[in-house]
Length: 183
Image (tube, rainbow, N blue to C red; front, side):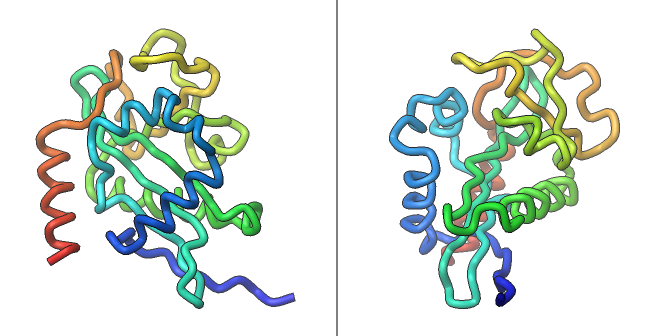
């Protein structure tokens, strides 16, 4: 049995079609109605914190994106979509992508990462359930699936409120990073 060889790298504009196909295969058309998707559509993902796993043959095997949000007045990142080509599920690609993105977010000074997902999958990566009623989203979400990770100690202290997409500072940085990546 051969070992899968892949690298993690920043997403680039030429990856867009492969990433969209990956999302369509993993989440189907229902993804557009989900609350997390609705938040993400109001602000671009952060290219500094969006990565792909690429095979040695150049195939995009997985993708993760972080999107700048605010929880009340506090800056944070929304993780997702995180998706892996179905035939490569269970090989650790998704966890590697997530760990890499979260490590980079911490290095860049981000404090919190929020997501909607299963604690059994995301818990080992530092995610915990959001205390009931502390953070709300502008649409339906199962409270047991609303998870958060602190990237720096005490980053969650005093944080509460409604989640909404982006802020001028993060969007400016994202726009500058996009311009630099396409220049």
